[in-house]
Image (cartoon, rainbow, N blue to C red; front, side, top):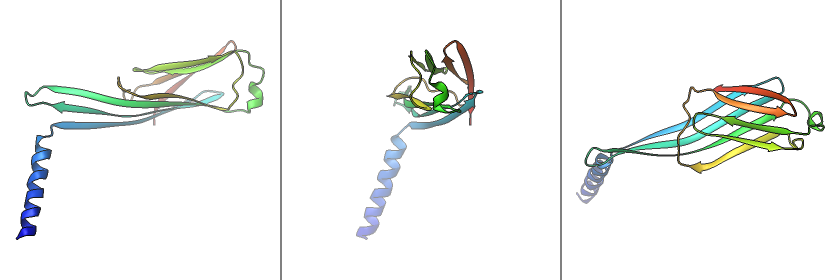
Length: 146
């Protein structure tokens, strides 16, 4: 009898607390990929959005996301040694960044990360534009959802 009472109380408590929680969580895990003649690129976005309805039926929204952009040179690093100006970056509907330097890259794989934070999250089917500038030559890469 005691065990039945404990199980009943746990069941009622679970139903009560879940019933009072008017939250809907939407997870976002997107990967976009693309390449040009000399470069391949990948952009990853992870995050979640939480819709909450209060007792007055007013809905609020909070989110948090982070991203990582990876650019990989297809050739050997020695081929980049004579570069005088190098820049790369990306632009999406909700964020973008660019890195610039007056020297050749020291690695074949370059990574730009955004720290976790609030703000807009990309749309799964959007096209992300990446740009690589080597001296006076610009390559544009369209990254599409994988």
